[in-house]
Image (tube, rainbow, N blue to C red; front, side):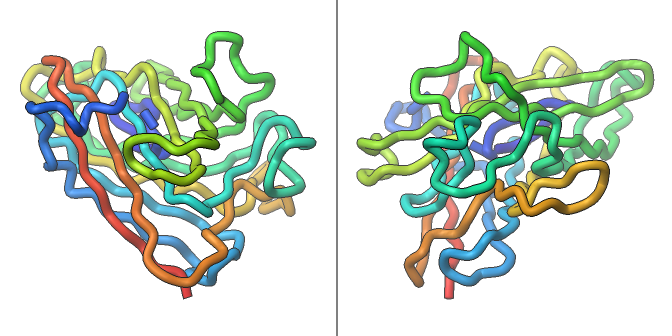
Length: 235
């Protein structure tokens, strides 16, 4: 999931299989880390990327097989207890140039990622949860939604079952012409409420020891596909 201009670019996430396109670019400078690195542990996951001047309109982050993410429906969730509506489940720190505070003035913005229930009726097929990134830039409140999508039969990135984080609408409408952006998204292992960490689980590392690959894709404002991948290890 990536956040730019105060929106979610997604959990990181699924999100428009364009990497097989002839005009796909492997240029996102993607990096991924988890803390702790213990296999099967509840852990914070941090995904960083740099889009440069290729502003995205949609994005998808493919989490590795075995990585578990909570569902809005407690009865189907692979982790328990699941977050509740309004719980803080992550944050996004981005650097971007927005017309809201004047072009030519790139700023750092920290957005809060919250758990949203119920899931929107227009969510992508296979959606099991919804999250929302929100940030304040001067007088403007910006919010963008992303969706956790379960892929039980895999896809072109991972043959096995896994989760995607899909952002159907990136906040490119706030970007200055020719501007660039970078962002780091951290998804918490445990949800927070009122600034206090709860026992409600957001995500867990894969249960197997070894290397695990995350793929990220997005479509830019010119319709070109961008993709990259990065790995993290569990011990």
